[in-house]
Length: 160
Image (cartoon, rainbow, N blue to C red; front, side):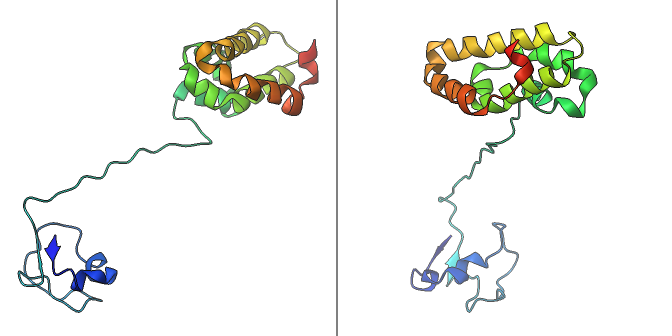
């Protein structure tokens, strides 16, 4: 849009404009003191802009395999499958949710201590995570893992 810069200094003058480019006829906009017309405001065919967004959650992943493990209690029948699929999740995604993933693994171990059905799968998942942290690409997360072990780890049955 092009317009008189003096009139456009007041944000309410352009924030109340319609969202669409082609206004059918000049009209007085509610809350504004000028008309959308060739004299006050015109649509420029040369100027344009594009807005793109990226939605990123800092608490929940969008990766269905990792999300299945993090929310394992909601579908316990898929637990074996979700534990196996963890090994196929991108390392960066697992590392971003390192504490939540470790919490889920140790919770599974603690809540299913009466059976050994998940022991090997949980052990393999823990080895997978430790190998990720040992990788040069993620070596700066070593301190995160150490802090987790010192401050957050509380799975008494896992000590065995």
